[in-house]
Image (cartoon, rainbow, N blue to C red; front, side, top):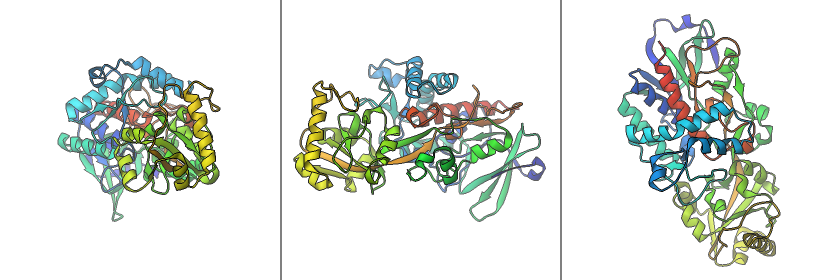
Length: 461
């Protein structure tokens, strides 16, 4: 990864906008730029656009949408911003949080109305930290499905996607104007492309072990469940160009990846009344605080393993998600008619599990919980009982390049004229560490900052 002089571009092909990365951020940026008549080329390292989005449940939190109103859900940008800031303990940039929250509803409606993406609100459970039902998803509740819809929209819009190609250099003479990029094809050949503006949509650095060890050492040995292409290209280019980076210690973890199956298990298994135990049959944390910080708690247990305990009622709710159905088909979900038999099937002490379940039931009836989790109002688990063996994982990083209200990358001195960033390449809204991640923070910044970056890049002359 490097910064090269612009004269090396030579007499190459020129386009209006180059977008580095064709995930949710990059493709949303392309749609916004094409809407304004710009010629757009997306350069994607994979053979088919996928990115981190394809590994997620594809949930985009958005406030004040007609999808919410249709279900009688009252919500607005101010409330959403307050939820984000509460979760990150006030450590995120409040102006960026307000911007993302304000753009969220309009962006989801624009994707639905202008680009035929069929969103609906997940209305049968509330994600931790959200005070309103605001998760918007496509029918299968699948990030891979969302990517497919976005790719089809980009193709209809007339943007070009160059696949199996990795951008390895940005070209500039003055450090303020990026004149183009160089990229390597799968066969090793190098091509160059001049542009009026460049959008970095190449996500974060979770796939780079050295950067993970440097910035989030507590996760250096954790399972990485993100996209392997998230190798910190934007952060490294930014450092060379004198850009400002913020919150590089922030990341999204997840405390519920089926092990050894490697399939994400919906946090509905917890939020609807389930709980987690370790190999000793004991709870170890407030699971409802958030699935991101729960990754750290799970990894601190013996062998880095936990079991999520729930029941068939909760399983039916989680089954709306394709990942859960896949995990069930793969045999990751264990069922039993009694807690004793469930304990035997998952290999934990039956008496310990019974004591733990009894303490949880007492908390459901109003007794204080040892970990401070509010169980009141959550239904008791009933037979048949379910369990899934899980581990903690690193999904994607939340820090990155600081951007302004136009999604333009911020420089330590001077000003970039035509460099923009969004999604995981940009500083997110999760604050400074793992506990600040509010469900959906990654995708909401991908689509809102992506749309903003594409529109702003199209205005560059």
